[in-house]
Image 1 (cartoon, rainbow, N blue to C red):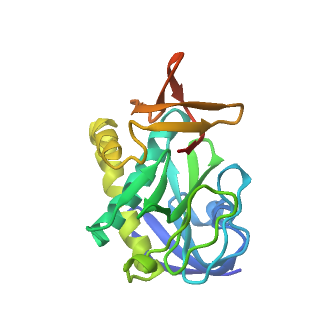
Image 2: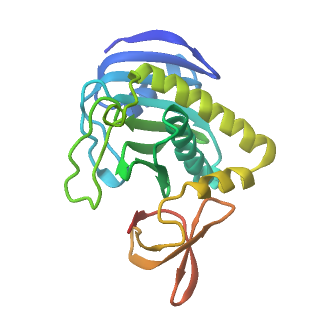
Length: 242
């Protein structure tokens, strides 16, 4: 595998590979030689994975990339929300008439269908690999899911994968600067305006159990507040279902 230098985008140096097993794995392997501020994209990703061990299907022309972010473990839930918000803002800017929503914590939905996947993994100490897959050209068939997938192309957004990458990293950088300057409050307000199933009955599956209740709010840490028959509960991590 060889990496080709592309350009500087905000604080990251961007490299691209023809094919990798996983862009997250590649960033982890290359970080010592390339430095801590990198983004690596790949035309093909043969072993992409999502949260909780799910596989990410490869479709030529879709966008697969991973970039680095310094953040404390305590603020990671807020960073997760910013990632989804930034991507949703990019899609809305490219297609203002489209229905764009975020399903907690950071899945972006376009016209009611999933169009992206995000996986965050620790590299070392406070350095994280943020891996994103975006359905640009085509959408995979989702087995066992209660929703369908879609692509940008299916919704009339005719940009190639590298253009989407640039748009996203610039928006994410802008949102992170806002967060660093003014805290999470404004980010949270923007996130809630486009939250999927906000104030509705939902089911949340955590690693240990399944809970049902009303999606009441998002707290100042990015945790989901679930209103149940027993009272309010804060959910740090989990999968949301209608």
